[in-house]
Length: 131
Image (cartoon, rainbow, N blue to C red; front, side):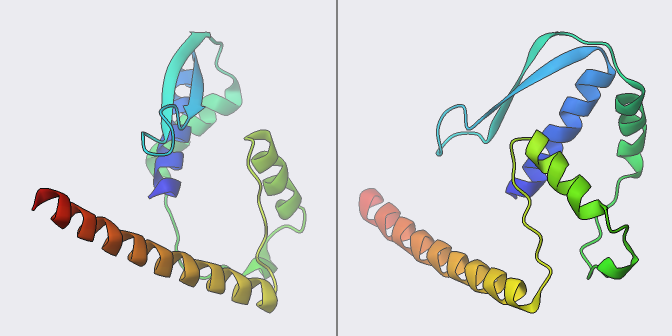
C-alpha cells in the first residue's frame, strides 16, 4: 500500500508541475501514526517538456507484476534507476542474484510474521479496552 501511495504522490506532483505549480512534499508530517505524505503548493513553476510528457503518460501507465527478464534491458538502466532514486532521497537496491532473492524473501517473510503478531496484539487490546 505504501508503494501505491508513493506512486499517487508522484503522479500528483507531476500533475501540479505540469499545470504550473511547484509542489512540496512532506513525508510523515504527523509522525508514523499519521498520513504518509502531505502535498502543499510552494509557488509557481514553469512546466518542462519532460513534465508535460510525463503528464501525458499518466493515463496509459500500467503496472506489470510479472517476472522481469533483465537480460533484455539496457545495461545502463540500473545506474539510471539508482540515480533517479537518489535524487528522490531514496535508495534503490537491485535484487539480481539468487542470494539477494533469498535474503529478500526471508525479510518479507519475517515482516509478515511481525505484522501478523502486531495485528493479534492490537485485536487483543481492542477487545480488552472495549470490554
